[in-house]
Image 1: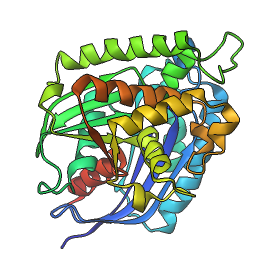
Image 2 (image 1 turned 45 degrees about the vertical axis):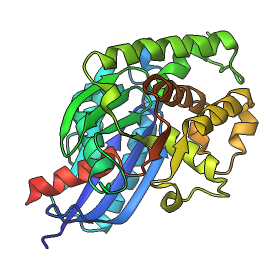
Image 3 (image 1 turned 135 degrees about the vertical axis):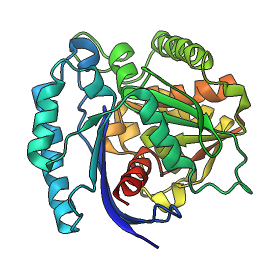
Length: 321
């Protein structure tokens, strides 16, 4: 076994995450050394202004400094750290400022990947360990991010993928935020209908290139889905080992979505597994998942804690061989 120690960073619209792991690229066996996440809202206002806000950049750079300390502490060899940036930094006019800051702190240049690359990494991370005796292929992996959502269909390899701009932060800013920047605490029927209309149009776009109806197992990734999984399990605290590979029925997703839409900010914040940075955006994310399950007739979704971050680590280990 040739084990590689690698560090993977996934910087999205809402959060930035780190995984330091020992990974065998031949078998796919992965041992976590450090896995953490911080909500930095890098995409704050990007949909409206086209630029990364100074305060959002500073929050992100502060997290990068903490991650640099962790990577050095675990002795990750040079050349085995990979930083992948997704939707927000793809869209921003001042992305060069973001890139320069990351290079200065971490010594690696962020890869501003395309939506298709993002989908491939997510698929690898989510499906490499799935047992074909338990979870039937083809798999449809849905990664509900802050700025975009990725849909990827495949078995042992990616067959079709599409990224669309219906992430939970983007939809919240577009439909649940007032002109003064304040949020609608409890969305109106009209606001929910507007989000549903955006998601329906996006799913039409996805269906033009991804044969959604071929899916036999739906796998859901990222914080919206894992949080819903934790709520459904009735956990007193977030426990990734219990959430990973748990299953949510379509009826449960519908019930949870209705409950969250009817709740106030404080009621959502009081849910034990709810990260503070997800309180305001989970409504939109839940609506994306529910619309997809209704569209393809999925009876359940498999919740995965392994996602794009694990896919980045796997490809980093392959490259380091």
